[in-house]
Length: 250
Image (cartoon, rainbow, N blue to C red; front, top):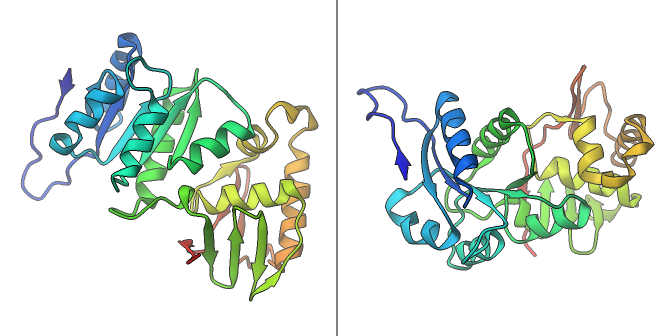
């Protein structure tokens, strides 16, 4: 099953091509229509094996990949994709929430992930954000062991933060927020999303705890909220990491 738009007219910009991989026809049918209406070209694969077999032919700009599928599940598909050096951006669709699930998904090379059920508009927002920060042929920021932004470096394996080579102590939650923001640079992240991603089942703590950890983070990094180098407050929305982020050598 494959749906395509007509070839763009000379001088026009080609639509981003999305490969949607899911074994549930009702989901692929609904999402295909929604993604097309949102300005994307869409191809569909029913399982991981089919996706890997057709990838060279399709050459999508991004893959939306369900985790729970027969024959070859999403995680194994992602591992094989990254194992052969293919860094096409991937958004995983999962049915298990929690910090451990998030860390596992990102360590395996996913650029982002969404828990089912989800709002299709949220998927569109995530797709556009991932495409903005995608670096063709280069491994994802989400899978990098170390990330750097100017004088700042984080080691995701040891969970340590350094500024100008000196270690900066952070609480586990403040580190997790910094890590999430740096793996989603230039993307506005709402307080609600940070609560869901970082606190998970502990969300009863309330949104103000996010602001408290952001304050802790800024103090530790000497990041002036009025003139930020790293974390910017987006009024009425949330926070955004504004520094350029790259993979640091190990």
